[in-house]
Image 1 (tube, one colour):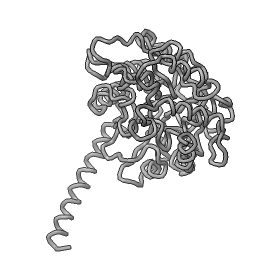
Image 2 (cartoon, rainbow, N blue to C red; image 1 turned 180 degrees about the vertical axis):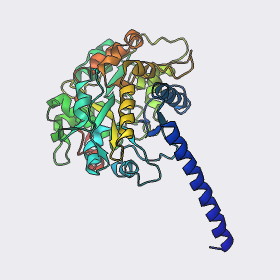
Image 3 (cartoon, rainbow, N blue to C red; image 1 turned 120 degrees about the vertical axis):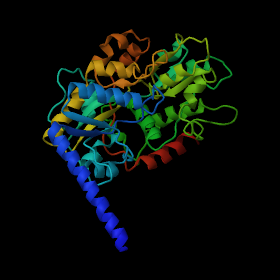
Image 4 (cartoon, rainbow, N blue to C red; image 1 turned 90 degrees about the horizontal axis):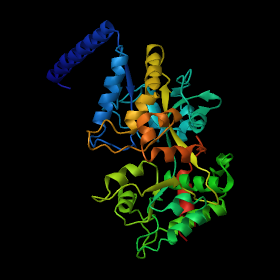
Length: 413
């Protein structure tokens, strides 16, 4: 390094340290603690602004109630894969480029995330909240509460047929779809993906065997023939014009395509999460009403016993003292029915353009809020998930690709 470069670097370093010192002094003077939280990204962007309006309202509303906290949602440096515990762990430990204090992610990786030593248990759940039991069960590991539940997620069939809505076995579902006798394919949906296809298999397994021993199905040593048969028959119902877009990458390459085709009458039904309804309503042809759309839990086996994913908030091992107090106040705020209500109803989007997100809240209180209760679809979603059981919260991470390959081979023979 030249002397000139060395001198310049020294000046730059001094300036940075001076600014950092001024920032620290200002923060101490103001008595504020910074809380950095990446939120779960796989939710509808109702305002179409990459969540800018959502984040702004959350930060503004929370800080008005807690002026001693500087809430930073989705720090710009955050680049981690929300489903990769090792990279999440580095950031939670403050070892990577982007240190943060709380992260919202899927409890499907809870066991593996705990094993990294990057998270620690919460001292309590937010009080006076009526939680869905599946969300709570998914957030515990070895008897300790590691997650504060936020969203639930399950597989749904969305159609325009009452017999499809009432179907409670895969046989009833396919019979109802075939009876429509339309030129459109019976069903459209993405059945690929190393998380997606194993999850659909586990759902079919639970529909056939019940969900109380679902952990035993997280294996590559044995696959249930009945569960595979149910998925195979659903896969065959996707076929159209000699191709099968459900398993050839067509829908996985375009996340909204299957829901959009259903909205436009080019598929009799679509298979996916409840928030696909948001896409459907946004893509209905002009003048077409949503009143004939039906939604129900997806029966993928010889029964309909839904299992539910949970997205929860996890606390960094570094977040103690004032940071932990701020984190607890943040999850308290996010768990309030009033907060859920405006997020579910997409009130961050401009008036006149608002389509509800149709996410599944992890609290039953949220379904009882006035605007959610009056919505034509949320009451049905609430009933469909009421008895849902928890998805396994460890074991799938390392074997999911092998499971995907095995299952895909079995259902496309």
